[in-house]
Amino acid sequence: MTTLDAYGYDTHEVLNQAPALADYDAFAADPALGPILDAFGAGWFREQASVVGHHVGSQRVQDLARQANRSLPELRTHDRWGRRVDQIEFHPAWHELMGLAMRDEFHSLCWTKPRAGAQVARAAVSYLWNQGENGICCPLGMTYSAIPVLQRDPARWAEFGRLITSSDYDGRPLPAGQKRGGTVGMAMTEKQGGSDLRQTQTVATRNADGTYSLTGHKWFFSVPHSDVFLTLARTEEGVSCFVVPGWLPDGSRNRLQIQRLKDKCGNKSNASSEVEFRGVIAHLIGEPGHGIRAGLEMNHYTRLDFAVGSAGLMRHAVAQAAHHTAHRRAFQKALIDQPIMANVIADLALEAEASAWLAFRFVHALDREGDSEAEKLIGRIGAPIAKYWNCKRATPVVVEALECHGGNGFIEDHLMARLYREAPLNGIWEGTGNVVCLDVLRSIRRYPDCVPALLDELRAARGSDPRYDAFIAELETDLVDVLRHEHLARRFVERMALALSASLLIRHAPHAVADAYVASRLAGGWSGHFGSLPQGADLQAIARRAVPVPN
Image (cartoon, rainbow, N blue to C red; front, side):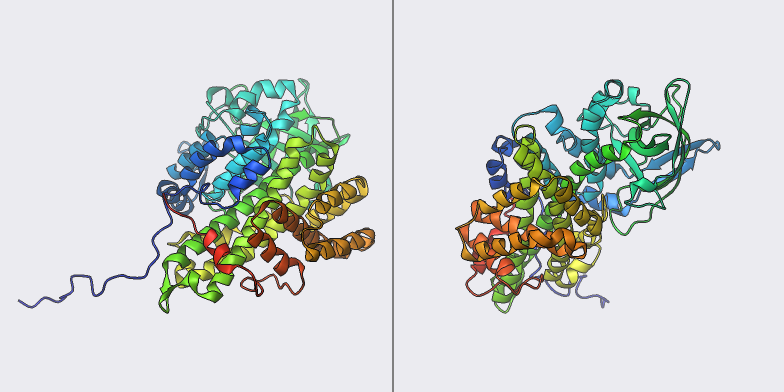
């Protein structure tokens, strides 16, 4: 009998395909994160960081992330009897990921275990989980930033403190008192204002019992299924900050209606929405008319978290590209051993490593600001610098890392496609590039002492490299005129980020890494693209250093 398929499906053996990068310790595989913990007072967290690294590097988490991004959250406005419920249904993978990350204390570690280096340790959890699934990082990052604000209100802290510091995730739609753990959302943005929170039009009316009723529309409400959220509304005194429980004391839902979920370019697993406040019951927090101040305090934490998260995203992209090129062969060599590819991978690795040092330096300042005025000043100006630069660099890093995979990187079976959609988002959240750069100038005007504090930070590396010294001398000259030329704010912040990154690498990274960074970024002629490291850079050492080693 003649068979129609003599090959039995297999016409050839599949060769020269890189294996999946899975079941590895993302912490141990990272050349920068361990030294960062040691340098910034969190070496005690190394063992736990390895536990988190195994979580995010596992095949299980990769499968969950893929499922959570394929089966997207769905809004149910009514139940089958016609009652309004405003519930969001998630794939079970989302809930499992949230449970894992909360168990790692992504949201709470620095607040529940205050000790030297605690902010840096918590940031390491954020950095690593941004290599697991970015969608869950939004609710956990917002919860982290809201905790210190809520702690200053004894009544609200008594009501929600246990819930939002718990490491036991509970995704059930129930009143806070019936749950094991919960999260905090934020609803700040309105259509007419965007980043200009002074344009808030939502109105707050005081009730006889001291609460307020809020009426208005919020254009971007991240994680609307949160147990409690913070929002802005206008009182007689001006824009004020409010705490809004998701449920009322009688067990009914608070008076908000989710209009729709945003169909976002990326960050698909996470639910973002538009909502109407229809007399939402809320509690004033802080002074009336000073809500923007409370919003900016939370922004300081979230902006640092976005700088850290973007650094984690870059590290993930670079690890994937380095792994692929170390296993894929062409012209009788591994791709990573081809000189031109070695230049690309080494250049990407420099960018990712520098971004991690930059972000964590200012998290370190957050750890120390209570004891050092200089650190407080450095953190004030440094957080927006790191947020701007890391979020801007994430997109070109991911694009180049994707290209290293060829066509395989551009299909949905590969997680690079998800990272590609994710990469631009942090540059938009909590202030776009222009807003963040203007905040740097505002810090210089309002807190002029932050400039000498920052210059002292840069001068700590002076004398190590004449190219660095020349760059710093020119930057000091630019500082004199920057406030008079607002249109040059981006250029100034970019140069400051490069100088700070170089300073940190000179002091803490291997010489080959620091030398290549200074030669390419500070010595002139840098295009911002990858694969253009100059003659003399130790390409193979830097590129091979970026390759993760599975367990």
